[in-house]
Image (cartoon, rainbow, N blue to C red; front, side, top):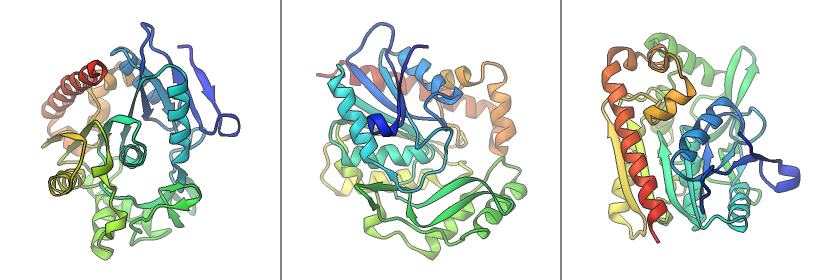
Length: 310
């Protein structure tokens, strides 16, 4: 697939731009995958382009899933580039940590009129890195937030476990539950130790246009269903301009991707992979698949309505 590559040094953001074959004046910033050109990112591109939108994939750096003080002005710069290059409408989509990033960016930048957040949190948390350190695969970064803006870290919920206890907690829970990764205790314990301050919540009432929140009760990484309900409550209590649509399922795991997108990512054995990754998918494979099918239908409808709206 032909695309344009962007580096921070020359363009002000790290990403890749993929124009859909039929032409479009709508673009989605897709923050899915560890790199803008990896398999996950390309799968999201193929799926989104199939529904008639251009796609700008972004990540912090080359093959980097860590998020610590990620400069949100990179998203702002990317939006300016998209507008200058024929895109009338701008959307943003993210999953897991980048679901939270999508919400945070959409609350800051009013040009975004479609926000798709899969398994998001409703608050900003402490920044983290992935790799190898003292036998740990992930660790929190001291005194750093997930995101920053113009050099200033956004207020964040600190983790109650620091290095190496942070990874020891995740590893122990993953072993206990049989999940590929299970960090729910890490998040629950941290929120208990440090009740989230008002400034640490994402001001979702500032989001414009359509807001789509997607999650499952059986998410093993964090309690996204609770976070989504808190956002619903927040919007019910505050003046806002966005139209919210929530999709919370009993079964779906952390992989609440549209079924078609997951099949592009893993053409053979996508269901088997999810069952291998999470015990909930092993127990309820049909229900999880039905969740992904429903997500696909509803997300396609939302994309079509957004593209067609004046």
